[in-house]
Length: 281
Picture 1 (cartoon, one colour):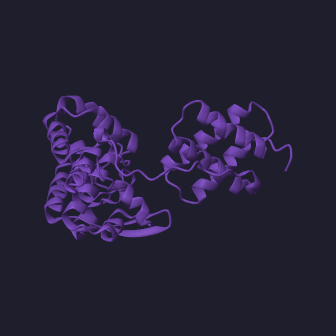
Picture 2: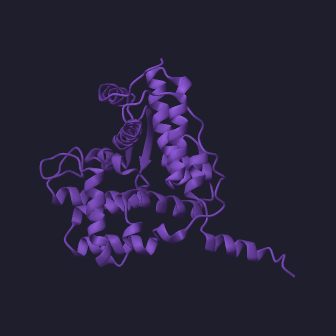
Picture 3: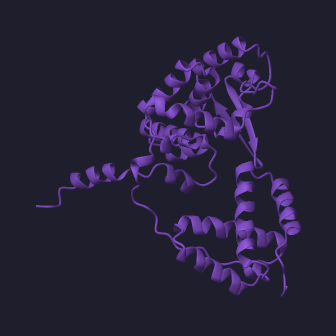
């Protein structure tokens, strides 16, 4: 495969492949962005194992965080697997598992309540209901499409994504609120969260609207994005049941290791736990 050139046509083929594999929209966009980033860096040079290794070193020299470097390498390795160029794949950077996390991006339950309240105060009823639905179920923003009138009446939604099927349970209180919201909007069947044109709302729309109300709600903008609602749900759920296997099932994680990332304690909590050891005499 010497002399292999990374062209836009080949990247377009990769895009078609990813969509055929039913990867999420955000994942497809990220993979394509990183492959194009590598192609731009090559600047017409042929792909080689040595070039990929140099790019890996270049990313580190530029100060990219190890997890960011690995994310870019993951996209590139996926492209190589698709193109039959497994020999060009490189190893990821080894990252020691974090014992605790920075709490500056943690969204607390109090802040979550403030966001819902501010959205409703501004008359953004749909946004308030979206935030509450994600916060109360732990679903991904892409799974809002499965919150239909029929699903709410049944008290459960069946999600089919990426070849996986799972059932999302909704509390009676949430169901009552969703049905009341749908009735007020004249939605008798199908998706509840739709645009004026009847299309499902996008992740970008939810993200943008959440950011818009964050300042008035008194919540740091860096904490306000749809996926952080899922993290908040995971933290609250685990504190209640202390069952990581059950939480993994609820979140739709195929690996408990993914769920563990959601549950890493903050540095402040870690410090309190260390103090309880009372090993400094």
